[in-house]
Image 1 (cartoon, helix red, strand yellow):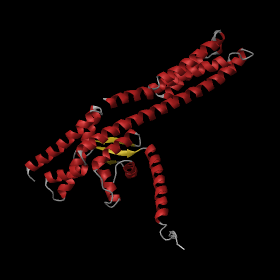
Image 2 (cartoon, rainbow over the protein chains, first blue to last red):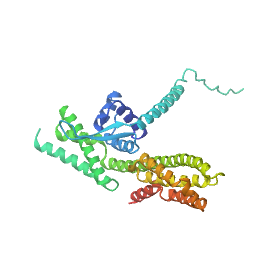
Image 3 (spheres, chains in turn cyan, brown):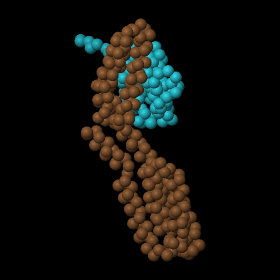
Image 4 (cartoon, rainbow over the protein chains, first blue to last red):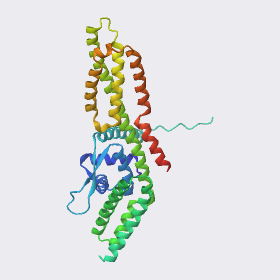
Length: 117
Length: 217
């Protein structure tokens, strides 16, 4: 999977349900996609940074972790929810278009071969 | 699991993080660099622990985690770029919002005060000669105050808006305008000055300029 716009949508969709830290986000994406979507987990952080700086998610340090070090937990913002809605709409439109093209197999008409007289 | 293996795993992680940090230091503030590295460290530790649970040695688990994380230089470069782009977006968004709200606030106050001044003017001056200067004066002062609020957002646009409404009501009392023979000229100059100030002190351009300088370095 390529990092970038696609990962942004996935991250927003995952943190929409509950606030999560980077490791949790990576695991949740894998879990939801039944391990089909796997990526270099380091590439997640540039995406998180971009989303945070754009105000689409908000990161807070959770220092109340009983065992282990503090973790930065990300939560979706109102703007993030709006953006996620736009990403979902765009994806639906794109996948519908691809379905239309891929579904043309049965009705595809072979071009007539030229006949020489 | 031996201490030697654990030590080796920590060494592998810290070497990797040092390489990422080297790329980040050029672009990010020290606190942000520290926090980002800490985040990566927590993530790598969690990945390694998960691998260890599957029966791997510490060293092998860390090596597997680093392999899945991606090349350090690449991650560092992408993080720096993301921070820079994100900051630019943030600056533009914040400043555009502040500027738009400042202008809206200024216009709203000007309309309210201008209308009020007109009502009072009509009582004092039969032909309403002072309506235009009072409106211009209100507009220019309101823009100045609202701009001030946008440059120092912590002051709170609402507080500044209320204060400016009070000050404008006081300044625009018909008696004051009545004693100001060059009110129209004065108000026009003030309006032009406030627009010039708006352009000159526009926060997005100033901060974007400094961001570009940082990027060049």
